Image (cartoon, rainbow, N blue to C red; front, side, top):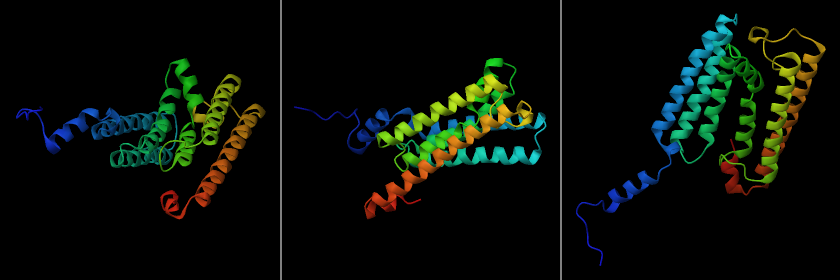
Length: 223
């Protein structure tokens, strides 16, 4: 026979304790706030670094504000729906907007190379978010293959570009870009074509998913 223990939690209090103990760390609101503070700190570091290389103040402000917008939007989404990874993915775009700049402007050669390869990688995360909306996870094999191929092509083109011209295809001259050449133009063209195909694929998948879904499901899928 189970006797009631006056020392142990009971009722709603006991359920709350069990819920807190089983709660993963990434669902903790404090974790979301900590990640936002970390992202804001990287933005504050990347901004002055870019300005010191000769970037205009207006360009630096706009770039940093866009990173803060992604970080803040992700923070709100993360805290509202901690079980949905969309908020964390949006925050990742804010990080990927500034971390490559810090890496490129560092004095460590291998870190500079990684920064050039990762420049613009936030677009891959954006493609993932659009295909995974609203659940935050890719729901079918085609979407998983599409994102995987895009990521592989992005890393391949970025690595080949660094090896060939020493920089990423679209890095500005102030971020160590090589003088414009036929090779650089070729990498820019290939990069543009890849993301154009990715954009068309995303639009096709979004429209198809919306029109195939039932009427109640369309209310969820609609932006």
